[in-house]
Image (cartoon, rainbow, N blue to C red; front, side, top):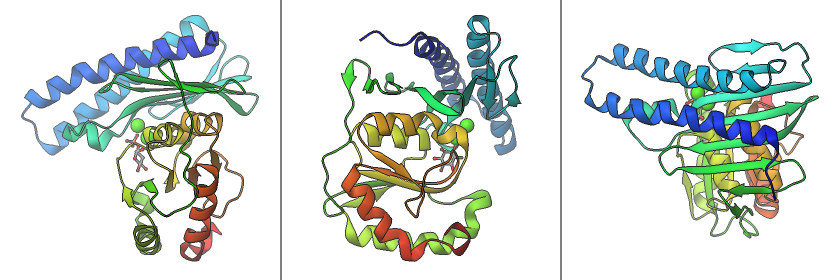
Length: 268
Ligand code: IPD
Ligand code: CA
Ligand code: CA
């Protein structure tokens, strides 16, 4: 099936950002700079990739709004369409040359996420979805895994850091419960790609606390279009940002039940 025009523009934007990211990775490796310098450099890459994305979209859709990690909200003439952008998801990995990061772009139409593009520049994998039309990686249809529960399941996660360290003790309870009940826990370090990999059945479920809208906007549509479920830690309706559980339907349910005793009071 032909891709929606909004998805095609999202792909063009994501590939351009991917090129900025990929090219600068080589520069990063050859640079000998201080930790602060490195951080500044990475910030340049994030900003440069985001500018590329917004510029590409604005040329075609000058009236659309944006919610982007580096530049914040910019309202369009009509806010019917808002592009939600994480130009580089997995900056800490990128900074170390750890090859797990992506570009994440979603289109929200009248408050609902309708299109998603996630591009992994290292593997050159392109994940796309449109609401009601399914999800794919390149030309291959995406389906969540067939896993029926926790036994033998591979679970993705993100460890709390920065402002979310307040939840570290609760998280350690979750870590122990999941480690004891499943085949293993992975912390790849790019929440958007973590969700894309649930959609692709590479992990059976994923959970993380304290995310932002641009981390999850595209990934959540990939998961639901691939037949998976998305919710809060307590199984409530997921609103963009905050805590999230995603997975194949049965593993999602089992994971929520397993995590329940460890959910911090303020997130119940
Ligand atoms: C981060 C990544 C990471 C997650 C963090 C995010 P960034 O995004 O998605 O996997 O654990 O919570 O902030 O800062 O690299 O765009
Ligand atoms: Ca992010
Ligand atoms: Ca980012």
